[in-house]
Amino acid sequence: MHTLLLQSLFPLLLITSFLSINVELSLSQDDLQYANCSEDINCGGIGGISYPFWGVNRPNYCGLPGFEVKCVDNAPMINMSNINYRILKTNDSAPSVTVARQDYWGTICPTTYVNTSINFSLFNYPSGLTNLTFYYACNTTIPGLQVNLTSQVCSTNNGDIAVLSVPRSLPVDLVALVTRACTYGVIVPVFSTAAQAVEANTTTIQDAVDGGFELGLEINNVQCNSCVESGGKCGLNTTTGGFSCFCLDQAYATVCNATAPGAQGMSVPCHSLINY
Ligand SMILES: *[C@@H]1O[C@H](CO)[C@@H](O)[C@H](O)[C@H]1NC(C)=O
Ligand SMILES: *[C@@H]1O[C@H](CO)[C@@H](O)[C@H](O)[C@H]1NC(C)=O
Ligand SMILES: *[C@@H]1O[C@H](CO)[C@@H](O)[C@H](O)[C@H]1NC(C)=O
Ligand SMILES: *[C@@H]1O[C@H](CO)[C@@H](O)[C@H](O)[C@H]1NC(C)=O
Ligand SMILES: *[C@@H]1O[C@H](CO)[C@@H](O)[C@H](O)[C@H]1NC(C)=O
Ligand SMILES: *[C@@H]1O[C@H](CO)[C@@H](O)[C@H](O)[C@H]1NC(C)=O
Ligand SMILES: *[C@@H]1O[C@H](CO)[C@@H](O)[C@H](O)[C@H]1NC(C)=O
Ligand SMILES: *[C@@H]1O[C@H](CO)[C@@H](O)[C@H](O)[C@H]1NC(C)=O
Ligand SMILES: *[C@@H]1O[C@H](CO)[C@@H](O)[C@H](O)[C@H]1NC(C)=O
Ligand SMILES: *[C@@H]1O[C@H](CO)[C@@H](O)[C@H](O)[C@H]1NC(C)=O
Ligand SMILES: *[C@@H]1O[C@H](CO)[C@@H](O)[C@H](O)[C@H]1NC(C)=O
Image (cartoon, rainbow, N blue to C red; front, side):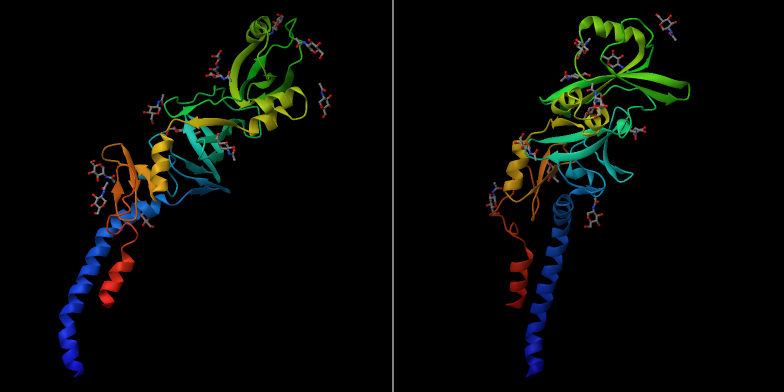
């Protein structure tokens, strides 16, 4: 009797297990993109770094070109024009990222003098920022330079040099004087609130610089929000360079298709089919 039952069940078992293997194989590619892009970048205690950023544990198809993040010495970094910018936080709803120049992290004496230069096809400067200018190798003996500028000394290979920090726009004649007296000028944006605090002497220049500055992201956030609301993960179609919405069942050009078979997860209906 048992033998009879097994004999009649055997072909059915073979077919269903064959089916389930096929289904799982075809699912795995799409599951992989969805699962991998569900992961945020977490580096040095800064988490929640997601689309359009990629790198570390997020494959390139989880973000957009130019938004690569590297975890360097336990801090998340964006490399732009050969300068590393340390990510302090991200705001998905703005969308924006707050960064600080790594070469100015904990010091106003960098080894090379390079202006802050962002890629305007990726980022923009939002309102609420003030350009702070650091002037290096200044001849402080020039008459008329004894103004209310914060001055400090940086030790370099060529001996000590004077630094003038200018936390606001100076009168034109004073700019001309400082430019003549100093060899290098470096522009570093800070939050305007921090610049005001420096002027009011309630914070230090170093803390203002370490507080970083915000950069708006030049991305289509409506597109990504629609994908996320449909249950997908935003990403890149590496073949076309266009947008891709990674869903549980497959990748779509815009949003997930909730009515497509498998969109709610294939494994549950598949296993009930086998049990039947
Ligand atoms: C996606 O994640 C899986 C593990 O979850 C890993 O094996 C695979 O290499 C990842 N794919 C890419 C392209 O990084
Ligand atoms: C700015 O970013 C875009 C997108 O990654 C890239 O194609 C372009 O070369 C970048 N421009 C500069 C000046 O680095
Ligand atoms: C930024 O990237 C360039 C090119 O990949 C590299 O040469 C440079 O060392 C990087 N800069 C930093 C500060 O890591
Ligand atoms: C994120 O950005 C939005 C829009 O600019 C703003 O209203 C919100 O306060 C920001 N959130 C944080 C935590 O800064
Ligand atoms: C930074 O930009 C300012 C204004 O454009 C310029 O005068 C200065 O020479 C630049 N500094 C460097 C180091 O390139
Ligand atoms: C700061 O300087 C940069 C050029 O280095 C400029 O694009 C930006 O608009 C300036 N920001 C402010 C708030 O003046
Ligand atoms: C500094 O300026 C003074 C006055 O203009 C000048 O006599 C002196 O040579 C300058 N020193 C340097 C190192 O340029
Ligand atoms: C320097 O500070 C004094 C007192 O705070 C002020 O009266 C004067 O205008 C300031 N000079 C400049 C050039 O900012
Ligand atoms: C700023 O504060 C420091 C200590 O907090 C004090 O030594 C210094 O005199 C203050 N400077 C001005 C211009 O008020
Ligand atoms: C990329 O776009 C092509 C053409 O529209 C499409 O066939 C393919 O499925 C897309 N791939 C992804 C991963 O979105
Ligand atoms: C969604 O999936 C259903 C079932 O496969 C299909 O009939 C429908 O055309 C799909 N809609 C879109 C917008 O792809």
